[in-house]
Length: 505
Image (cartoon, rainbow, N blue to C red):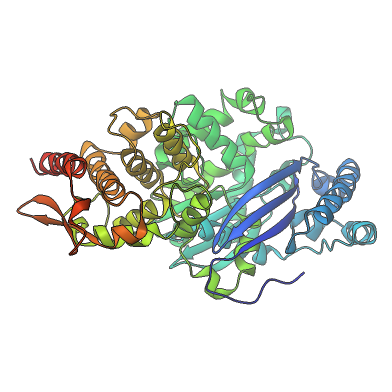
């Protein structure tokens, strides 16, 4: 099926992606709204199609049987879902296995699905597109580890640059036996370093920028790290580690923690057994590339396939703001257009508010908060602030670092309640300084002031303006609307004034 005609509007579509990897086979259904896309159904099997590549050069017979059965099931789901488009991403196993053409032909006859694989260079580019869909400000090297290959590609200025593929996936290096006696770190390190030398992989590729990790093995290592150190914001998208902490994690996973990561609760054995090798490879990458920081991406090839297929005007939209619009749709206690009036109401005064980020990034987050204002329709008033806080903190919103995610969630929380304690004070305290918490509080209080002043009415809010005079906030009404300014509004103005004065002291 073809995409809808190019448009700069935020339109809703449903797109399915079939990801045929060397280790896993996955069907994901996405709701696409503008440049934001959210998975609504995700099913995978660890078929291990590429497990025999090193020894036989062919697909794993067991993997072939499991994959064929899964794809027949997936084709029935796709028919029932009536999606706008189905996109297939087949990678190294189907590129390299001698019997892959026969397998592709059988699947097409049985399901009409075309599993023709992309090239290694194209896989690297698509993985980078998936990274940029969620992290448009990414600058550095994207590293995507699959079962049979490792793709590397430079990203900067919102675009992928030249990429490469290397035969450094666990199945290509180790074959079926990924742990135990076959796992010999000194020998594997020599092999990896030789491959790096052969393809001129060195620190010049990175220039001191970030290393972005894509792929299930590295995501699961990061998940284990969060649990071991009780990191309070349990989302992997944008999770950052210093090179020193990442190397310590790798050394532990290769050494004394090897058995722990292989059998870690909640991680399948077929995934777990790839983790020691993934850790060893990562440690060699860090030593060779010398990145400034390590950043985990929860997006990659699948999201890249969608992002790459979107019309150019759609890709240029801000995915954070489209995601906020989508999250708020049908969930607002008021009219959806209230956010635009709110931004106008706050425009003059907010220039005097303290900020936590660069002017551009602060404005982006404040607009996101205005788009989210009023969410929580149908929630009990006693619990609304807590539930909305957690919804924003963990929502699948693109373009947010963990610090920004905490900041946005705190703004929304403060727009509902003056209660000091949030549902996740540990994350707020770790990620935001007291001054940054105060800045979030002030903008949240200003939003709450607007809601009270207008009764959540767009037309009434347009009759009001918030300004700062002599370091004191003041609401001015157009002629004939002075009755909107009364005792309840005075209470909100007093609380905003107190917060502003505290930020200046």
